[in-house]
Length: 356
Image 1 (cartoon, rainbow, N blue to C red):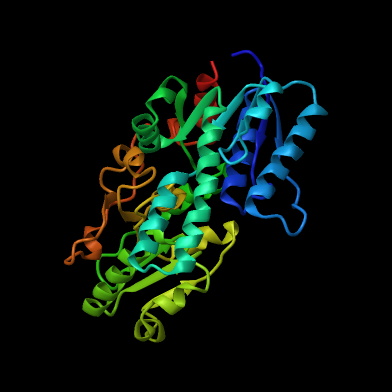
Image 2: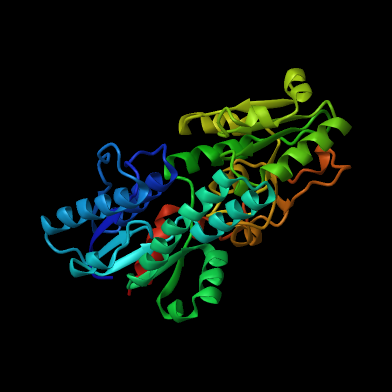
């Protein structure tokens, strides 16, 4: 393919600790290794006192100023929140979805309607504005890259006039972490007996299936008090929603925050993973747990259906069977073809094809 001059943008500061930024950095590095000229950009910190609407316009304005100062790019890659028709005069826009904004909004709306208060309903009404701006961002694109096949099907069904512009991309751990996960998988030995140590990773948000998780944890640990469940990356708010008895006894453990460098150790000390999301962008923690050799019990959200063919034994439906024993966990293995699709080198190659 002809060498391209590309700009990959992130709505957040370019840091490996932020998922959306880490993805932009990984994709930029992989495309650079394929010979393309790639730059990355993120808006600076906005002035204090700006509301969400003005912050977005301010960020778009900073991006316009940057593009006006640069030689022309062949494509500018933006998330829906940064996409704006004004940017099309600088280069064709690739709008790359990083999360299903409308599905997140609907999940939050359903939660507000279950326990309605004027404040909650007002927040959901105000949140409608960003969803409409993301919709306008899709219409500004020359090419729309949906995150996985589930996201693409949703957009194609609800917005059929956009189908000719739709493509897909997938997510994967960054290369250094992926190598470390392969080492963990190679050294993992499934327990034959003894307690099971479970791991759940995610923000403490409604769309992550936290009600489903709470019910599971309460029922499972009441039946099997020798087991342990760790909730990681959920922030301190989770503690107030969890069983004080199980927390005090150590059956439930909360790790409010952890750095990317701490993830391998966290994965190494657990036997099985839980993924309970009702709505998800991709769910990179599922890739990470599977690659580290954990058996994962997952709801069919985000990228789970895309991953299922590559892990026919390790990836199973949530909830786990009540009679599950350690000896019935899958032997860790990665099906043939996984690394031909779920590495950043493979993702960059597929990205190129989407721009043809």
